[in-house]
Image (cartoon, rainbow, N blue to C red; front, side, top):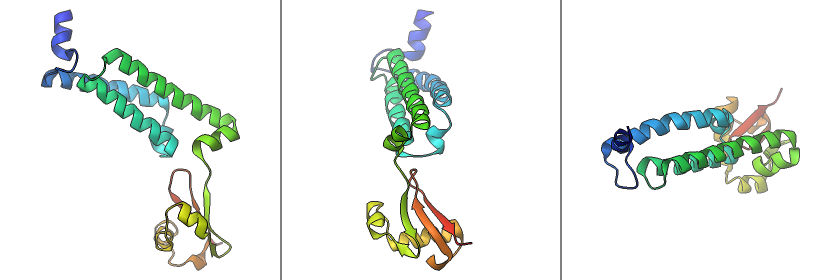
Length: 163
């Protein structure tokens, strides 16, 4: 049995195609389980907080596939990362201050007929970008038909039309 496992999964960095493929197969299901543990928001919200977790998870798990790190410790490390993400998300729901620290706040880009130039600059957006978002999000051509515009914590622009 041990010989079969070695043949399928190998050891260290000298892995052949079968061994890397076997590891990738197993890591796929482990990753699926870890993402289910982490929660839907990991890929649903696309905030910096969630993207950071997803990027680190992918980077660390890839080490198990290519044999750059030992398999079991790598998977356990990823479990810790996922539990950390889930724990911080839960704490940020309970504590507004922690939520604000981890996720940030929305940024007002337009209100009361005025573009907030300093916030546009902070968000790396031009007036042309805003007009594009207005057309796409609110289905209108001009800011005259818009009440407010925000840069959300996910990086998306939301547009509120006038009533």
